[in-house]
Length: 69
Image 1 (cartoon, rainbow, N blue to C red):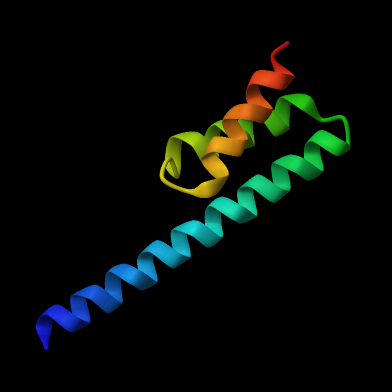
Image 2 (cartoon, rainbow, N blue to C red; image 1 turned 180 degrees about the vertical axis):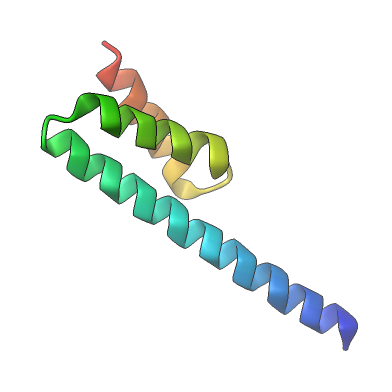
């Protein structure tokens, strides 16, 4: 029973982290579209640093590389 609760808790935490990474990434995209490059880059870095295992981290790295050109 304890193992099941641990697995459920970890799944909930992972889902919440993935949702947060997606939220930050989408905000960064919005900032980029609004020509607010500095804030977009800050948010992309946050995704990469705080949520490196998320699907958005790889995309954030790509956007950072593009914005730094």
